[in-house]
Image 1: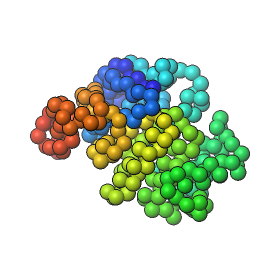
Image 2: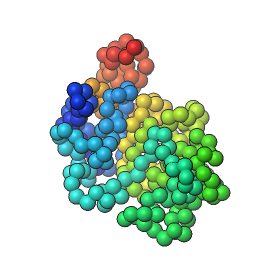
Image 3: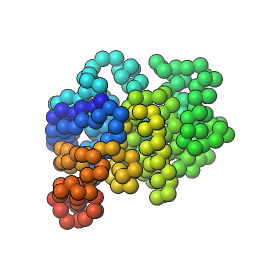
Image 4: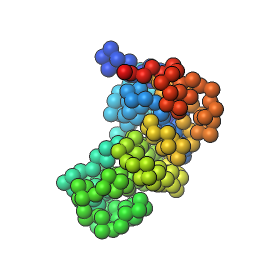
Length: 248
């Protein structure tokens, strides 16, 4: 569904992506891991066209991601943002139905609200939450609302940006389980970026290790622990010793 071919991206003298090659199969969940500042978010934003690669190509369903009708292209995606990114001034249901209230996916207001409440139920929230504001919700509830928004328009592809950041271990487990259930249920293609290994094990079909601007290793999640790759082994173990230098 998504293919990176020799993708490079620099910001001034800083080379972030230095020849990324990666295939994300249709209907599978790919988790990209790596330390902070290794280019995970840049890779994700490049697919969406928020960042333009300096060279190389990114295709989505066989078509160049930088060409064609942008509205139609973006309508295929859902996104769960790292910090929730809810609109403080809008009630929960309007956050969830944000894309259904405007643009090419616009639905009648009553229908959009009904869909929002249905998606809130899907992530374990009751209909009374719909009329609350984000400030009235806990961090875990806000993350669930973000997940409901990500799936509200029935996207083919869903991106998850550090989905458990700021959550306690129990709530992280709940969110991971929800993500896995929903991706399988929808048959969606998922791309997640994280450094949380519990998320990796819970939601990945395949794993890719990004370091020094290239994919150091990729394979099924079940082969991760016995990969033999020194970068991946060090990252999984959290060891200070290895080819990945700790920034002090």
